[in-house]
Length: 330
Image (cartoon, rainbow, N blue to C red):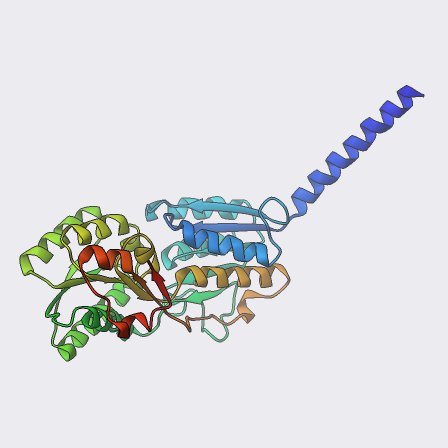
């Protein structure tokens, strides 16, 4: 009798193990490719997925690959993700999304892809925003290059005597650097309208940051403005340190700067956009076709002010700025 009970117990254990194994293999699989150094954004995406009912290791398998700032590794990582045959892949930003599209096309598969790029249409990732077609959809960033002048306007309010500004830009921003060119031109036009001289320094690698601030000292600028590209964001710690060292007020195009000690940021919430991307992934896992899901663009923008940094710089943030702030870090 005892032997039979033991046999039954073993069989039951085997059955449970088999069921657990089957459950694991049938979980929806989500591939993710992003540049790294964006923990806040990654967490926003994963938390939004959990809200949609897809938790890593419980109700979904989530395979994450990060370039850790080395975009050259993106193609190999894209191939690696595609080889896992996921149900859907999320890729950010545009250059990495293109790697994923190529990797999928190369093996002749139709894996749905959700992207977060500067502009999926302009970058050739989708046919149109309203009807993407094919197996790609997702989100785009700010479409109007003139928006960068908002950063200049905010800096002018904070520093009324502003006359010289240094603009730190990523020359590779946008398809073929188009976003960089358009934004720089818009910034120069905005400077002329506000009576502010704007000069630009390109940031391609870490070494360019030291050169940029040497130039800021040489030109005796009154403040700096930093673009919102992934390349620039990846160097934010050093940029914030040097802005503090030289006591230069700065307005940044990404809220991570303000959270990490920068004075002010003003742009769309990239964390929120990553969370919205999770909604696309969930819809696709539930049967929606990516080609039928219109591309979405930002509709809200966040102004974040770091009062601790303002105090350290000896700057009094005007009430006109504080009243507009979506978040004030004290």
